[in-house]
Length: 255
Image 1 (cartoon, rainbow, N blue to C red):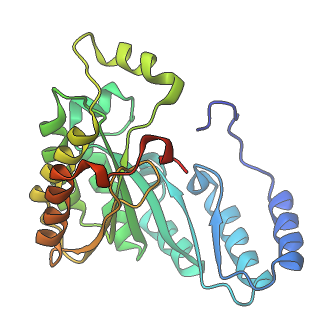
Image 2: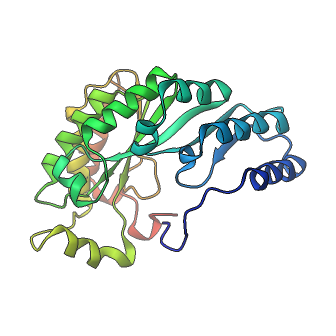
């Protein structure tokens, strides 16, 4: 997604000017997402100024959200995260991708499950709502069951408010990924993805989490609350496995 972009933290003045300009054209804005892929890397003092400006320029603003990564949460103190939350960043989107330690190394996640648990614990202590994402299909056919079970284990330990499952989409990078993962790597097919999803849901023991597979990459959109809707979600997946014609067509993915 960011192959053509070079990362930088934009000067504060640039961001404030953008907010002022948008406040003129979109004065009724209720939600703001701090772009792009790593907003929480911004120094805390600067981020607080941006958040204050958001609520100053948009009087109807209800919430501000942004991405976070493991390094962000490990480097910022609980006090910093709490100040950020109190100033108006209500929720962070955080990709764990997998709970399989070996797989995390292969995909160069640059974080262990222990580090992700530690970082998310700090975020929870600061009052931040966490939306975690996982990626189905990362481990291929051979590692699918382990990926599902250990990802569920990590989710159980973090217990986020939101859980979203995405499905691996590599486009022109499929050959590169297959080569990096090893000679015996095989991509999953539609039904394999559903079986992996089923295995993960079966192993989930989270409390008060909203579970979704409504991302455009997925073949089967699902939404429910866990644990109360667990059986319903599993029934939906099982029905789709026996009625594959109901799955999203390949050409519709990412739309």
